Image (cartoon, rainbow over all chains, first blue to last red):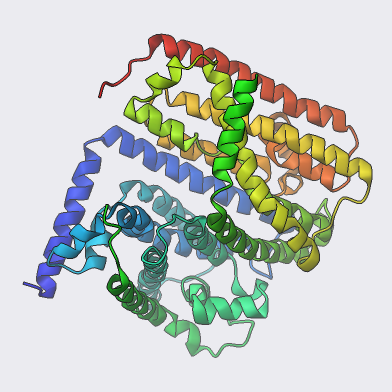
Amino acid sequence: MSGLGYRIAIAREFVAASIRAQMQYRASTVLMSIGHLLTTGLEFVAIWALFDRFGHIEGWTIAEVAVLYGLANVSFAFAEAFGRGFSTFGALVKSGDFDRVLLRPLGTALQVGVSEVQLLRVGRGLQGAVVFGWGMMALPVAWDATRFGFCVLALVAAFCIFLGIFVLQATLAFWTVESLEIFATITYGGVETTQFPLPIYDRWLRWLFIAVVPLACATYFPALVLLDRADPLGAPAWVPWCAPAVGPAFLVVALRVWNLGVLHYRSTGS
Amino acid sequence: MSAYVAVFSARFRGLLQYRAAALAGLVTQVFWGMVRVAIFTAFLRASAAASPMPLHEVVTYLWLTQAFLLLLPWKPDPEIEQLVRSGQVAVELVRPIDLYWHWYARAVAQKTAPALLRCLPMIPLAVLLFGMRMPTDVGAALAFLLSIVAAVALSAAIVTLISISLLFTTSAKGVQLLAGAVVNLFSGALVPLALLPDTWSALVHALPFRGVMDTPFRLWLGDTQGWPVLVAHQLGWTLAFAFLGWVLVRRAVRRMEVHGG
């Protein structure tokens, strides 16, 4: 009953149902995706405007920052799509509907995660992919199997990190049912942070993004590998190669914390 | 008139209750303020000569955007959204006050209370710890105060218009998303408007959105030359949005179909 195959099958059912539901309103979903693409696209226009004026940031050109931006936005789009259940989790606790989740013979995190998969996030993903592709074409980078494989691993790792942040935020709802603005700002601020090279931040912020919330492992270290750059802060050459391992580890820790939260859960009773 | 003042003060006091949320919002916005200051400082380090504003002005501007972020007209009034969806909006029509000004008064409260809760602690904090500067002379401070009031009036007019658009279509999420992005870019919330490409300046100056942030912020920084024109630009757009909303609300009420139940 509780084997991995069973869980994957159930998750696939959930995801398919969610997608079918959204495709009932095909025009609306397509328009929302386009709206999302343009919205996130305008953010890149703002970044472009800054490069137009200043030329570079800490020695990074716009093409190189486009690689950071692409990694951040493609992985975040997936995290947003699959983490939707977590980012609206406060409402589930507030209404007492989490009780029903607990009654079902399946892990709570899995159920919440796949309860709603937002198709419109395709907009951000596409936009990020285009920016990434443009950046890579503008740079003299030779693609081979190693680089391609590493790129995929880096995207998966960054997805895990962003999803882990969504899970940790949702876990807070076990302690405070108030829907706090803090939730949204942490993730969206996190994306903005990862769009720029790490050395621009102060020492304590750098360590925060390496050791506490490993956002640096989501884009900066993988980009060093993809762009053949050495870390100006003197990290040994093997460090960036290991960065993708941090992603899944962070997600596992986040899920452990989530389970602690579930133990702490007390129904609102309404 | 007193009815609208009552609507405003009831909503205002209601919004002041969310103090825990305001504190959490303050902490996170201070943190991201530091991140944003780091990003812009690095850009200016690349080429300070390319910037029409010195670093300390950019830093002050960024902290002002953090302090007044909640002034931005992104979304309709959430309670009106609920009313329209449930059909309860019919009750709003029964009230013996003008629907437009009723909703406008709510919007003014919705823009002022959260912004006050945010900016009152944040500005002293940023001045003491993070290199933000206060206006250098009394004239600039007074012009800023006048202009920030006009910014509230303008933002509330845009919010009311977005709320009214719900009467024509209940799901305008895609349009809303896009409108939010345009407001972000052209108000100065993402990048100080002076740092955008110089070729854009005619467009940026004509659009209404700079009136929500950039105009009062420039006055704070002491750029008070021609301030009456700047405030007139804000108020002119406010009147235009208010008139459009007032006309639309009348048309909407005539053709409104209320869901039963």
